[in-house]
Length: 331
Image 1 (cartoon, rainbow, N blue to C red):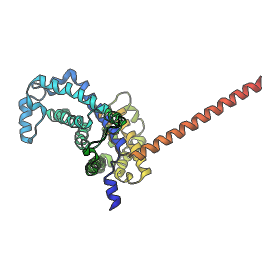
Image 2 (cartoon, rainbow, N blue to C red):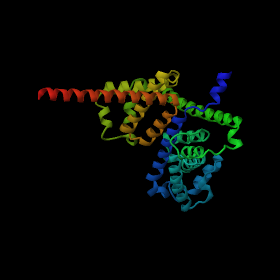
Image 3 (cartoon, rainbow, N blue to C red):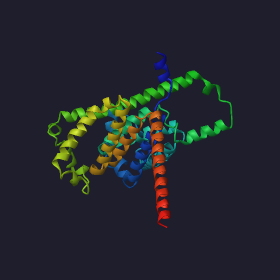
Image 4 (cartoon, rainbow, N blue to C red):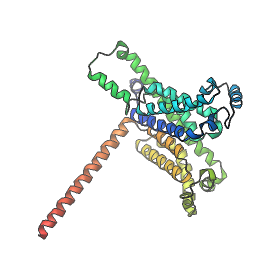
């Protein structure tokens, strides 16, 4: 029981969640920036989805968004340009909790205003932004943490509220449950995706990836045809994708196989970005993988990279000495 309480009252995956915050902020910022020229077409009152049609749909769903405040183009400008500012503040980690709530509101409003232009990345981003509002995503790589350290250097006595152990433990418990909700959502997404593929005849005979890559909406004319040159590679990649997605939850149960799972997931999404052109979706998914790594994992990776640099530096210095010795002997 004590171990469980110690686990629950200590915030986990702080570095990974902070990196995920940056990935999510950049993803939404990119989406807002590239759509500035066509913002009225996508989300305007006279755009692809007229305001009356949108409002009728939202009434049926019992949903409210920022766009309901005013059916005007200036409201679209407020959401887009205000969203850009919020994304920038979220990325640098200024007032992170407040910006996290606003990020979700902006993302949810854009998503519901025009459901026809959304993709899988928008779905997972919308869901996880809700969960990570309750996590401490500003603990690393943030202005908030920098300001906190400055205040601590001034040796001001903490308030009674910040000294409350009950409050600290409660925040940690909320953080951990929200983080676990994110992980469960990610695990369920991979497992369900693999399970549905197993039930498809194209994936059963190893041609699922081939037909998916032939869809014109997800086609890179420079790279995708390279995949079609080898039937064996296409079949192996099709079966490998299904096997990886179904095995993903179980790979996370072991420390070493977890690294394999995360590395494989990143490689999978880099491939999706390169060969299918789904850059924003892949970026969001790679950001999701970061929250699976604990602080200890990042410290191990840091120490390992330092060891590699030291060995490389020592090897380079040894070669320089050998070259200098050879030159001296030649003289």
